[in-house]
Image (cartoon, rainbow, N blue to C red; front, side, top):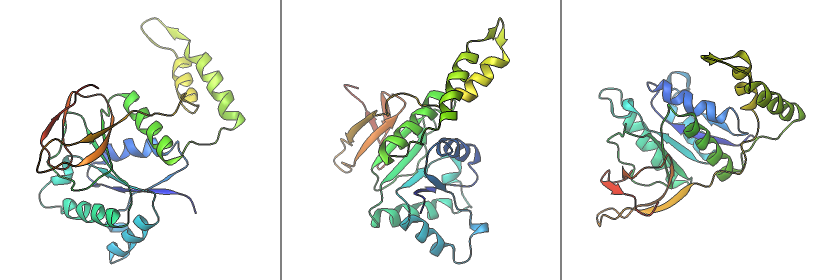
Length: 222
């Protein structure tokens, strides 16, 4: 059976979902994104099977997570709880400077990222590949594509990108990116009424809200 990750999310945050889907399109893991309208009733049974068969639960926090009237937060809370009870790693993903007031009581990893920075999206993919041994197998065509892509990418016209640069970027993107990403810092929230421990990943930050208590943490000695 193909290995998979379960994505807990709001379907209204489609742009954020697309970001994560682009990450998984270049790994050997399947991303499970259930939509209630497409799941046989009761949906909870299908979701439980999906989580049981998944390597981890990824929680995608966005504006619609806490939007009144759509009940997304109820389902996300339940999915997190079920995954935790099954001993699954819980990764929380959140955009830098777009933090959501949604406390996650238990998690293993906290990924802060800027969706407008290609480097951050690549960093997510590298860390997923590293943690879940999900690097795609290299085929000769992929190696050749990366070589050709890199060469074509050198071609630029003054004042804008030449076709070679665009093709080079697309072809080169299918190749390897060097060593596995290992940028994770073990954090314990300093507040006495929290003390949640997790691995902080993603874009470098000086301060961030604890994903559990949502109080501000200051990162020292980065």
